[in-house]
Amino acid sequence: MDAPSHWVTGKDKDTVDAIPLSSLIGPAVVVDMTQECAENPDALLKPEHLLDWESRHGQIPVGAWVLARTNWSSRFSDAAAYKNMGEDGNSHVPGISREAADFMTQQRDVLGVGVETVGTDAGMAGTFDPPFPNHNIMHGAGRMGLTSLANLDQLPEAGAVVIALPLKIEGGSGSPARVVALVAR
Image (cartoon, rainbow, N blue to C red):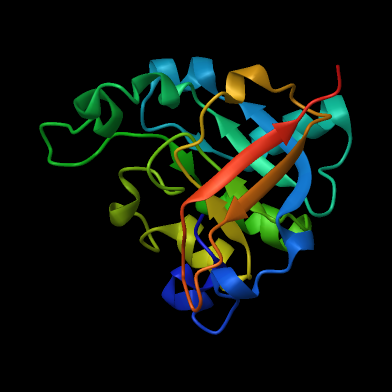
């Protein structure tokens, strides 16, 4: 888990030990990008994905965790495939666009985002303007990021509840976390 203080834009925000329990539990909004990511490893979660989700399930709930289902966790056992380094020297993995981060922080009141990759920004995000936009925007707005998630394919698009429990590291900007989802049977 990346706490809001994880990035320079959130340096004055909560550290891991200061995040209230109520900010670690929220409804899951699972956005399925698996087909898009299979065709384009540099795919980005965009506002259109979120609006499409809302067209089927209603507005993203306040205090939701938005989870990008990319099937990238299927690469966990192969470090080279997981990093997906290109001949250009960049990692080619999906992430979250600046526009989606703006939408989630300015127009929807989400807790944060979760991804199956090693970071919430795309592998190419260092080349974006601004660089690493999801980190800049989300953490600057006091939101969190969950990385290296697995089993998102077992969650429904709506209806689950995510509980993200980091180690309570004093002053920590991030922490390993046990992230679970409760799903109605």
